[in-house]
Length: 349
Image 1: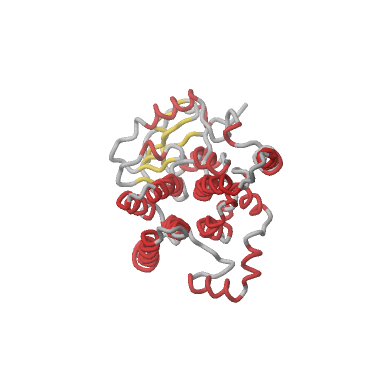
Image 2 (image 1 turned 90 degrees about the vertical axis):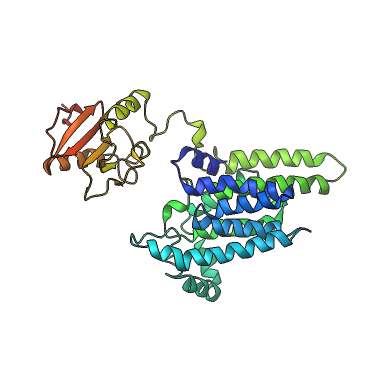
């Protein structure tokens, strides 16, 4: 489905890594391997705070079975760990002010959130559907599996934290696209496997159910899935706007090799991974504090507009930086260095 396609196409993110671990939790439980089950849950819980809730409700889903003791015990431990994270660990690292779990429309604290939802349930439910592009995000993981996940109703518990965390969020990029649907995309596939198993047990002796299933899959794919309502799926496109060309990649790799290993550096989002494992590394938010700045005018500058990189480079030249190296559309600036010519920054004729 498109949720998983977006996750594959996006940059590294702990949400996608944690979502990839969820099937291992289910596999270990179904194979009755408690040690592997515990290790898989621990790996998920240590990935990111929202994944703790995903794992907790997945355990509650698995507990709807004859073997409920182990998943219920795991859910209890995960609940304790989530409270420890929120109340003890995260306040130690809260200087930036950014919160992944931010629900301004319902409250600024967890107690306010719960109070608002209990006092105004209709408003809370309506918030899941407004603005309208949230509906696209809600339908996407389910239409990607032809809604077969609903053949296993117990998985509604597993879907719950993913849906609430994303569509109550104050961050609009949680609602549609990007990689944030990876968790529910994976869970929808797992629920579908469970649901198709149920279908084999429920299906009548006649074979006309097969025709119904074929129609459901086609309707889901064409009318609700990637080709009908939401536009072309990511894997169907030959080249996305944020892809780089092979030649541009060579240029970028050539110039960033000139940055000393111990130097502080600010870099565009796609260049950051190649410059990591150093003491000081920054995004290209103003003001720039690093001694070196790596930019590629060909590539996307998320979360900024594409022209941001060119504008920033010209600003830095006026602030005492010089162009250390320039090849094609890629360049590195150094504080206090003399500039070499760079055609990429020259105004078009």
